[in-house]
Amino acid sequence: MSPLSDLVYLPRPREISTLGGSFMPRAGARISLDGDAAALLPEALRLNECMRRARGLEWQIGAGTAPGPGGCVMRLDPSLERPQGYRLSILDEGLEIDAADLPGLHYGVATLLQIIDTTTGSLPAGCIVDSPDFPVRGVMLDISRDKVPSMETLYGLVDMLSACKVNHLQLYMEHTFAYTAHPAVWAEASPMTGEEILRLDAYCRDRYIELVPNQNSFGHLHAWLSHPQYAHLAECVDGFDWPWGGRSTGPFTLDPSNPGSLELLHELYAELLPHFQSRLFNVGCDETFDLGQGKSRELCEKKGKGRVYLDFLLSIHRLVKGHGRTMLYWGDIIMQHPELAPELPRDAIALEWGYEADHAFDAHGARFHGAGVPWWVCPGTSSWCSIAGRTDNCLACLRAAAAAGLAHGATGYLNTDWGDDGHWQALPVSFLGIAAGAGLSWCAASHATTDFTRELDAHVFRDRAGIMGALARDLGNAYARTGVKLQNESALFRVLVGPQSRLPPGGIRPVAIAETRQWIDAAAARLDEARMDRPDAALVRDEYASTVRLLRYACDHAAALSDGTFDGAAVPMLRDRLHHFIGEYQRIWMERNRVGGLSDSLRRLEAILPRRQAVDRTSVRNERRT
Image 1 (cartoon, rainbow, N blue to C red):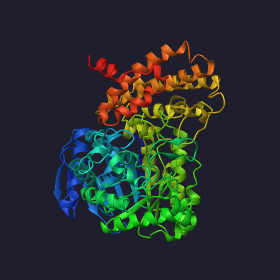
Image 2: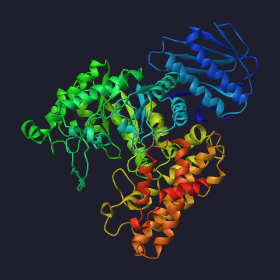
Image 3: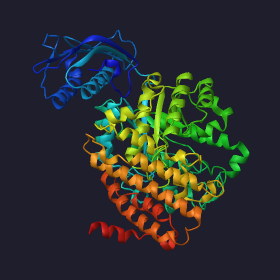
Image 4: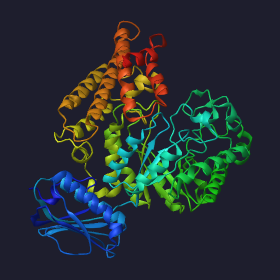
C-alpha cells in the first residue's frame, strides 16, 4: 500500500502528512453529519455513491455524532480560517472531514473520492490540510467559433471541473444565445436557449461552480454587424485594415459614437442576465482592432483612441451596474493606454489575458495592482490553432500566470479555451490544459514540476493502462518538433490554413517535417492499448485517432509544398485523404456538439486544397448516411 503522500491527486493538496496504519472501509459504516445535516447531506450522498461504485459498500447516513463502526464524520469547523479549506483525516478507526465552509467540504470529499478511486483495499492513514491559492478558479469555453456543445457535453465538462476543484465557468458568446428579438443573428448557430442556461446554471450550483454570463460587447461582433439591420452600428461597415497586415472585408466593432450601440447592449443584457444567478458579468471588449478607422475616426482624433475606448467601457459599466452585476472586462486595450488605468472603476475586474509562455503577466499585473484595479490572470490551454495542442507552451504559460497572479494580488485565475479558425481541435485535446490550470490555480507550489500525465490518467482519462496522459502530452508537443515558433498557433496548423507568409522562407525544413512525422507516429503508437474507464471512452479514442490523422496529413501537406509536388502528383493523394478526414470529422463533431457552426468549420477544411480540388460537403454527408 502506497503512503498517502505518494498517491496521485488533481489538484495535489498543499499539505499531506503520513501516519502509520490504515483504514479499511467496511459495510454497515455510518456517515455522521455533525451540524446542519440538511446542508451537509449532498456531500454524504456523494461519498456513499463512491463507496457503492468503487467498493460495493452501502453506508448509512445520519445526523449528529453518533458513533458507528469505521465510518466518517463530516462537520464545518470555524477554526479553519481559509475559505474553501478543509482538513481530511484518515485514521485507523475512521474518516473525518472538517471544512471551513460548504465549498471546502465539497473539496474535501473530492480529495477523498480520488483516494478511494486510486487505491484498493485499505486507505493509507494520514492527514491532508488544504485550501486554494486563488478564490476564483475558472474555465472559459469558446462557444462562438464554431462549436456550441450539446447539453450532455456541458454537463460532463462541469462534472470534470467540479472534481478538479474548479469553481467558475464562462461560455464565451458573440451570437450563440437565442435572443428572442434577434433570430437572424443566431439562426444558423444552434444557440444556447434561456431554458438551457437555467438548467446548466442549476447543475453548476449543485457542484459549487458559478456559471457566469459572457457576452462580448464592443469588438468581435461581426456575426451581428454583418446583417443589414445592424450594419448602422458598425464602426467600419465595409471592412478595415488588420494591425498585422491585410484587410477585413466586413465589420467587426461597434461604433462607440452611435447611441444605438448602447441601446442594443442594454436590450441584450436585460434578456440574458436574468438566466444566471451569478452577480458577475463578462462584457469582453477586447481586440477593438478597427476602432478609429471608421465612424469614430474624428472622435478618436479629437479625444484619443484610448479615451474613446475608456468612455465607452465606462458607459457599459453603468449598464452593468444598473443590472446589479459586477463587470468583468478584458484588459488588453487598457494595457495599450496605461495612463488611463487609474480611471478604471474599482468595482469592476480587469482580465489580463495572454497565451504565450513569455507573456507579460508580471508587468501587466503589477500595473493593474499599482493602479488599485481588481484583476484576474487569464492564461489559456494553447489548444486552438494547433490541432493537438502546444503542451510545453501551455504549461509554461499557465505557470507564469499563476506566479504573476500570486505576486500581484489577482483574486481569480480564468483559464481560457478558444476555437479560432474553425475550432478543429477535439475537446479532449484541451483536457491537459484544463487539468493543469485546475492544479496550478489551486496550489501552484504543489505543481511546480508536474507534467500532469499521471493526473490525466488517474482522474481525467481514467486510463488504467497509463497511456493517454503521455499520449496527450507528446502529441501536444509535435508543434515543437517543426523548429518553427509562431504566436498562438502551431506551424502544422498554419501550413493548412495559410497564407504561407507566416512561416519562414521555404516553410518548414524537410528534415524537420520528417522528424515531426516520426514523433507523431511514436506518440500515437499505443492509442489502441488505452483502457479508459469513461462513458465516452470510445469517442475519446476516435477523437485522438482523428487528431493523429490530421497531424499526419499536415506533415505530408507541408512535405508536398517543400518538394514541389503540391501542384502536381501529390494533389490526388492529398485530396482523397482530406475527403476521408472530413467525413470522419463531421461524425465526431456531432457526437459532442450541435450542428450550428459545422458548415463554417468544414469550409475552412475544404479550403486547405485549391478550390478546384475542394471536397463537396453534400456528397460527403450523403456518403456518411449510406
